[in-house]
Image (tube, rainbow, N blue to C red):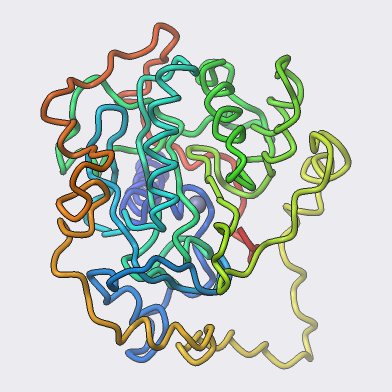
Length: 367
Ligand SMILES: [Zn+2]
């Protein structure tokens, strides 16, 4: 009995922690440094910026080492989306990213039979590294979308904090999608996200990529954009290309040609990516802990981004907000539009126990 209780408690503790840290941990995106950052560290400074700089919008640096100016916020609610984990203040992105998310959410209802999207982390108001979760999401061109459909009602702020993640993987099986949870609508959602020319990559768990390789019978042109990676079993991650004219944005290498259902996927089904790190030799010196990233380690312009004047308020910088009168307002549409009804093949995710899934510890990867 005692053992059972201890196990249950441990499991609960792990899940509670996953809930507290959120998509990052559940998705295996937690960076190496969980210790408290020192006051001058890049993490502490960027996490401390509560509002974006004034425009124009520029991504600066690389997805996993950079910052941004002129970010706008995704409104917390729209007719076809709801933003999650609001307390984190990570609804900020390049306007191109926010516009894409709104468009994607509408297309998801129209073309994928999906009732609307739950949006996880995008970026901090000025981008940069975060105190927890994510090695990337630093320049406003990355966004996480839950695999859970938007419910037909507005979630309360509390629910948005605490709603557990649902893994798409089968418990106690190696890298296998759970057929009871996975649906064709999710496959359509992924391929829809990959269909936009400005989207460069979609990160998903290797089991999900394999499922797509094995089952997608439609046009496979964009299947290669789905990239297998650790975690990403309860959400997927959309990465946009550097927008045209964004001179300070460092592009990532293009995705290789083909559908990616090849050796690069087969690798994930070998022991190599899941092997624990080799123990150090008994006489070896203990390795130095990695140095904390300081602002001086980031692109030069990021120091100025931290010092730049803020917009006047969160509302003023919310996409479609008062500063964009006449623009594609989501916030204003919300009042008029009821939440979309769930699609017919929507599965019942609500209330299911959270599950971190059979994923290994995070390893340092560029996402
Ligand atoms: Zn992500």
